[in-house]
Amino acid sequence: MKKTIFITGASRGLGRIWTEAFLKRGDNVVASVRNTDSLKELVAEFPENLLVLPLDVTDKKASFDAVAKAKSHFGVIDVLINNAGYGHLGAIEELEEEEIRAQFETNVFGLIWVTQAVIPVMREQKSGHIIQVSSVLGVMTLPTLGIYSASKFAVEGLSESLATEVAGFGIKVTLLEPNGYSTDFSASSAVQSKALSQYDIVRAALQEGNKEEDYGVPEATSEAVLKLVDAENPPLRLILGKAGIQWTKYAYSERLKTWDEWQDVSIAAHGK
Image 1 (tube, helix red, strand yellow):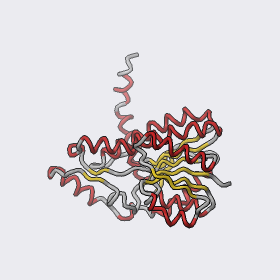
Image 2 (cartoon, rainbow, N blue to C red):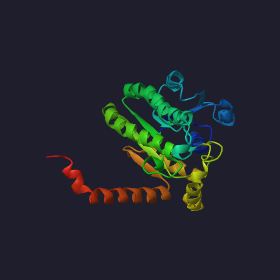
Image 3 (cartoon, rainbow, N blue to C red):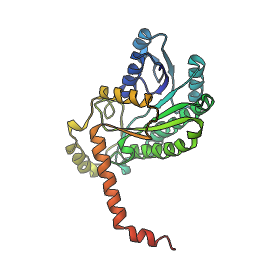
Image 4 (cartoon, rainbow, N blue to C red):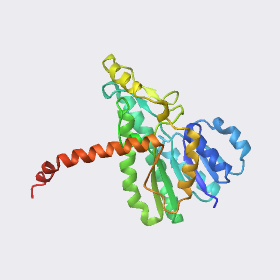
């Protein structure tokens, strides 16, 4: 069945790949981007099915206006994919205040504004699917990616709560958790703090453990996302990539081990 998908951050990377996949199978797509010229070729190829809107998700009013335009144009919004975001590299001590705020303005606040804007539309429809693009770094961490992880942990918490709040309206929520992919995430789209030499050894160790096989093929995610959008009962969480599955299972097994080891202390702290 033909769907209408609103996707943020659609100009490049996974967002661009998913936009093309939806269009090629006949869906309607509302693609929000900072620079509309980035999708001129797709507009020419899919003039009836693609609506490109300029949007900086950190602008709350603009986010609400974009959703209103999408609803007016296609009459419905079946799926929201909150994909806009970027990575920030830097040890916690290296982070400047404006860098921290900027990371949260886009990855967290921007996601919240678009989500808030689309909920009334989906509530009126009595149906909808909100897909929040998180990361495996939203459930585990790596050194020098702490502020990025913090933003994705925030997305995980608010989206899990959101899922229970809107279920009665017929709205479903999924957290999409990709592992690393061969996109420009850590290149042109990423921001890096001014490095302190004290953390060079940490960066070197991280780089040494970086394996090419841990990075997935971006185009391979399309089929998974199409299946997710079409699922009658989509999962609350979906990991993309075999490395992410392995890392997350290990991270949770370590947490369970620690909780078990300290269980007596935890119970005693209850006080009764």
